[in-house]
Amino acid sequence: MAGTGERTQGTVHVIGGGPVGLFLAALLQSVPGQRVRVYEKRPEYTRTRMVMLAPYLLASTIESYRADTIDGQDVEAIFDRVELETRLAYRRTVASDLRTLVDEWTQGFVPLNTIERGLRELIQSRDGGDVEFVRADLAADAALDLAEPDDVIVDCTGTHAVLRDVLAVGDEPGTRGANTWLLNLEHALTITFLYDAPFECDEFCKYYKNLENTGYKFIPSVKRTSYDGDVTHVTGIVSISRTEFEAMPPRFNGTWLRENFPRIATSMDGFINRMQQQSPGNVVGDLEVTRIPLDVYHAWNTTSRGWHGSGLDHALARTPVFLLGDSAIGSPYFQSITLGFECAFHLAGHLANTQLPLGAVFDRYETFMNQQWLRVYMRSQMIKHNKDLLQVVDDTNGLLSQLHIY
Ligand SMILES: Cc1cc2nc3c(=O)[nH]c(=O)nc-3n(C[C@H](O)[C@H](O)[C@H](O)COP(=O)(O)OP(=O)(O)OC[C@H]3O[C@@H](n4cnc5c(N)ncnc54)[C@H](O)[C@@H]3O)c2cc1C
Image: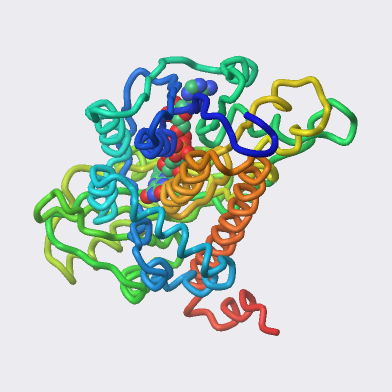
């Protein structure tokens, strides 16, 4: 790949075949002549947790793209309108089979491994394109060794990205700088259950269904799944302390919760009782509980731009590397896969455009990822702040102490 001028199309090595790596591979599969290799360490897709994708992923107009009430104005403030039009125009060119899948997934909650399997099966069922799947658990050096001249590496290995912390060039020649900034917003339980009746929960519901819960408010994000007939899939979060987090196993059920943290279980019972008064029905099966730190983080460098032109004799100075998905930016509150897919659209479009010099691809991707970071950081802080206010909404002094008025 030349530093300036038109680029020669080499292989794109996608390290990590989670949802975002697979989505990028599916996009690149439609680019004539593009070879793609996806390296995945897991033998099969077993993650069944329900995830949600934002409908604006397939927006066709700027108005529908910024329809999300929580950050519609931020979108307008951060992204140039002409650039946004170009990005939305690219989305309209996405293959119809892939659009159909994403459209289905934006209707409600969907198991994570349905997305992973759906993408992999789509790629394998298509006639055209050159995508190969390789089973491998790659460390940073091994990943960099894959690249021949003109190849590109995209690190999609998630939160513990293999290449994130090698991308920043340090102050001393040949040394590495710090490349990750992380903020823990809170610790939480993600609690999921099925309910055999329709149930909707807006912001009033989030308050009134938690009315008697002085602590451990359960904040649901409710959508009726499109596949389960009359079954509503309810997923929500309960804030917990770090000490409580550390005393819990990574995953457990309602029975374990009741025995070990009865106050949280009582709070859930209260929520479900009030839910039953609104829409009579029953919980199907047990609660599924996962403890998670709700972190927001990003990589200062999302490409190997700093190494290029550094004059250093290092694989990173020769091979373009891009971070994508959770390896580049991590965000809580059910938004990460949408963010990863958004960034995949951008990267796929730029890798496909071989007229664009590498320097321009680096610059545009870094700028775009900074904008996405700004958007998701502001959005996450806003959600966290609103959650904090909800905790104290009946306590005037508590409420005032949370407000920072000019
Ligand atoms: C409880 C919970 C609920 C969530 N709910 C939502 C939600 O509703 N909506 C949402 O958008 N997000 C949600 N998320 C976050 C979402 O699951 C992640 O953001 C998403 O999976 C990130 O996708 P990714 O492809 O970037 O990374 P990952 O899903 O982490 O995939 C990385 C892939 O790389 C592979 N890999 C890692 N290292 C290597 C290596 N060295 N060599 C080869 N392969 C490797 C892994 O096996 C994996 O397949 C939730 C997360 C949790 C924990």
